[in-house]
Image (cartoon, rainbow, N blue to C red):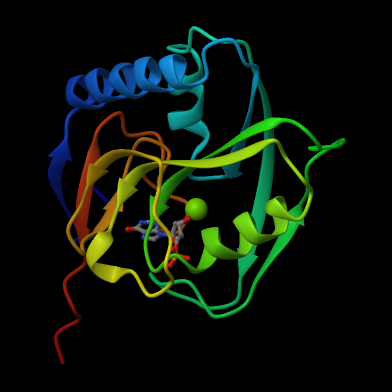
Length: 180
Ligand code: XMP
Ligand code: MG
């Protein structure tokens, strides 16, 4: 805990591990006989991706992209661009994008549009957390870890101002408004 921020447990590390194994099983069945290219979205997805990848029973390669969106605070802004791109071609490959949180859908709709233009054999999306209530851009993930309410969440790779990523569980973060 930093300052007077309050953390409320949403998902324990045991609950996360169970769900990640289930997702890995589902993905392994769906891609049986194929090789997958996992595309992790930095930084928030790196812990999830590392755990998910180790539950897969199909051959998987991994790459990372990094996106920047203009905007501050706890919501993403209106303009998204890649600051770290993929290496090599995606033509004919089975690409599975792995992201921490699907919120308004802006970030992933921009990313998926860019990746689709690179002619993969298939393109699917796996998100750990789905804030369905906040959706503004139509986008339906193929694999979802957990649905979450409209809380700001941290832990398990997910940050607030670069803090809390190392927590093994997932929490809702509340920062009390300053007293006037
Ligand atoms: P959009 O609105 O583009 O947002 O779907 C997705 C990105 O916003 C970040 N995000 C969060 N980050 N706690 C965070 O640390 C949150 O509760 C949260 N909600 C959205 C996240 O990086 C995601 O990629
Ligand atoms: Mg992110």
